[in-house]
Image (cartoon, rainbow, N blue to C red; front, side, top):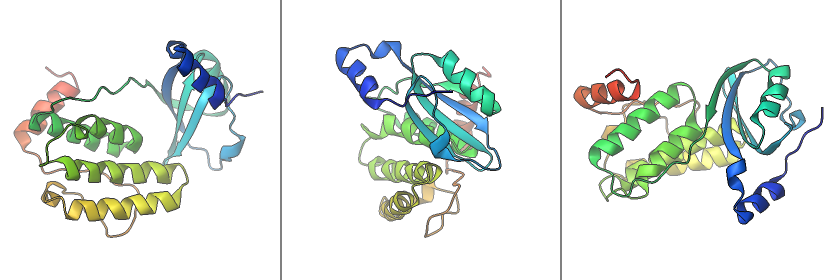
Length: 212
């Protein structure tokens, strides 16, 4: 079965303002015992990134035909989850509650090794956060990015990001906010646990899981 991995076509559509015809999806599949990443060429995927987890694979695709993409993927993998990626709008003036809520979302995402999404969630509040949280949030973003790089088989970049993040966290003045037992050197996976009050945690869970 043929395939397309055409960044030029995608970028040209962006310049023409036709990007609305494309959508981005994260498709999680069960990880087979053996996988050759170079041989996975997905039809109608204008951009494709594979992130290898412990028991699953995240296939991150931009496409104008999700039906053709799913038709191919389901012929070789067992699909366990599909998520459409929405644009993350930066929060222009995040409150402390906004920041803590995004950190709690990162906790939940990290349990499923969704580190790319953890990184993007925190980025939306980090960009405009005040000096109290700026360096701290950047360190957690870098830690999460290191995990995503590792999933993409880029071990060198993963190690460098992790070491930089560890140093940044140490001088952020908020290392006590992290309850996860972080090691001095790179390891995978990081399951985040933050020092956030039970009251705020409960409020977030009720909203996040639509329990109200």
